[in-house]
Every structure is written in structure tokens, then in C-alpha cells.
Length: 456
Image (cartoon, rainbow, N blue to C red):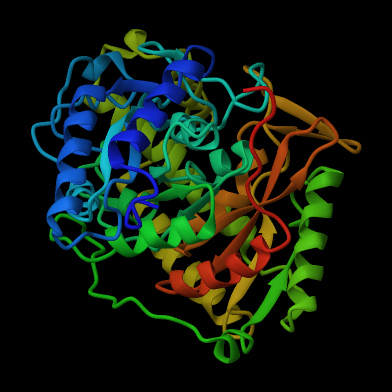
């Protein structure tokens, strides 16, 4: 529409700003709204169209960024009072790539403290609400980003994911999200830094309402950067229909460890039927080694992060929000993480990953739940599913596996619960095969996809 002059960039930015002002008091999705700068950039973008200047693939598109990623001139506090007032001096590389492609950053979005939760609540900015039900969370830690995109406050944006933090909010909020392979999109400029053992888990990636938009964002931000220890020069690739149909797909709607809701099972079965109808071979398959992968993820994400936080902020634990103190208490139930036990975790991770990738020689793509439940009510910590009580954070194990294993994974909306809450499905691929994941996700979206939240 911008290229065909059906709408000006100024009109588009104005429409998004109006939507932000209309709904954000209820959602509380934004940390910063950079309205004046966005309007100035919109004027320049319209001038470029008039002048016939070559346009980037995102020319004039209004986007948002999670407030753990540096955007020059905006606060980047990662939701904690321990970084209160920190203003980014320069753009993260992926933000520079988005701006070079023509995108206009409207502002940045809320996160839980240190990104350590599957809900979005912080001492700095308070609680963020789901656009589907204000009494529920949009997920975490990219919850503000998911809420803003679902509510049409931005066309798309960037989140980060160390244990489901893109995928769970996408699932809870009814949008699409992509957790890439570590190194495919540079995590440089993210806080906490994705280095050392945490570089195995934490990635940054796109979030949007459709898979086509997700793919476009991915194509703009993908590529190596020296600041990312996993960076690799992997070229963008495509799949024609015939080649894509050669993909063998495995699926499971229960990992044998954590049960899921009936509606979640139905979303998986609907996905399987859709893919089979389109000519894919789809077979039931529960990978071996998921329990070990979850144990290793817990050691790195829960125990490892808790150890770093205690060392970095010794004596200041009382200044941390309750969500983070809950994680610290959770880690106290585990044996202390020592140099010897950390090495053991790292060695075992590589062994488990190799065995898992061997299994993906037969099934290049997996379909499975994102989490055990749809969006939960603020503050809930356990859920009854059948005869089982599922606790926090085990409800999100379906996402955590693939952080430890390093697989790319996308989320596609595929239905609603009996209470009218969105349910997404997870499409998992082999490392560095984001394009295949997105292509399969596009096929799934044909029978699912984003719907506007009611009542906003």
C-alpha cells in the first residue's frame, strides 16, 4: 500500500499512534513511545517515495522492539530497577538492519525483570495485560511485544527467547513468532548478554501477525555479526512446492511428562490434518531424550542465571521483583552449580543434541504444543489438567526443550480454547533451517492464523 501510494507513511504511523493511545492504558504494553521521532521519520519516508528513491523492503513499516534490545535514545532497562534509567547509546545490529530496510520504530515494549518469567510484570512498569482478556497475561518475557502486535499497535517487532519467551507470548496472544537457531540472527545489543553458556539458549527473533510478515522480518535481520559467538554466514534459502513436500513431519501432542489441555490436543490434530490434506507425510513421533534436555535446560537457565544474578547483584536481592526472587528460591532447591557440574551439563548437552538431531534425519520438522495451557490468569502458578496438577514453569517445557537443543521453532495460531483464548502450535526444524520452518508454518496458517482480539 505504501509503494502503491494507497496510504502515506505519515497516515500509517498516525493510525498506529492512535491505536497505541486508544488501548495502551488497558494493556500497559509500552515502556517508551517514540512518537515525535516516528512522525519525523514518516515525513522523510514519504519524501523518499516522492523523490523516487529506491525503497527498502520495510519502507515506512511501523514496528516495536522488546525493551531488552538496544534502540538508540530509548531506555533499555530489561524491566529491573537495577538498570533503571539506562539509555542505549547505539542501535543493536538487528535494529540497524531494520532501520536500513526502512522500518520506523514506534517504541519499545514491556518485559518482566531480567526476562525471567512467562508473564510480564515488573517493579518498574507494572503488569501487562492480554488484549484477549485483561485478567490474563500475554505471556513472557516478550509479553509487551506480543500484546502490542496482537492489538495492532505495531505491524511487527522483535522479541527474545531463552526458554519460550517469543513462542509462549505468541501462543498466548494469538500471533506468530520465530525462535531462530542461535547465531542466525545476531543477539548483539541484547541484555542480558547472550554469551558463554547462555549463548546456547538465548536468541532474538521476529514476531508478527502473519507468517509472511514474520518471514520478511527474518530476512531483513538474519546474518552474522561479530558480537554473536554463534554467528555463521548462512545464506537465505527457498523451497519450491515439490521440494517442500519431501519434508517428513513428526508430531506429538503429549510428551509423556506434562499433559496438555484438550483444546491444545485439538489444535495439534487440526494441524496434522491440514498438512496431510496438503500432501505431506505426517506421522506420530515422540523424540527420545526430551527429559534429559529439560534437566539440562533447567541447570543452565534456572541455576546458571540465578548464580550470575547473585554474583552480579550481591546484597541487592531485596531490590529485585518477586518474580526473580521466585526463580532464586527455585534454584535453592537444586544442588549448587559448580565448575565441575557446569562442565558436565555442557558435555551432556552436546551428546543429547547429537542424538536428537539423529532422530530428525527421519523427521525434518516436528509439530507439538507450545505449552500445556492457553494464557493463564495473572499470578497463577499451577493448573489442573485431567487428574494432574501442572506447575509453573513445567507448563512451558514444550518450548524449553528446543532452547537447549538449539532448534529453530515457529508458532502459528491454530484455534481457541472454550474460554475464547488463542492456542498456537509449534513448528520445529533442524538447526539453520528457518526457511523450511517458515514454509511449513505458512501451510499450517492456511487453516489457522491471527484473529483480532474481541473488545479492543
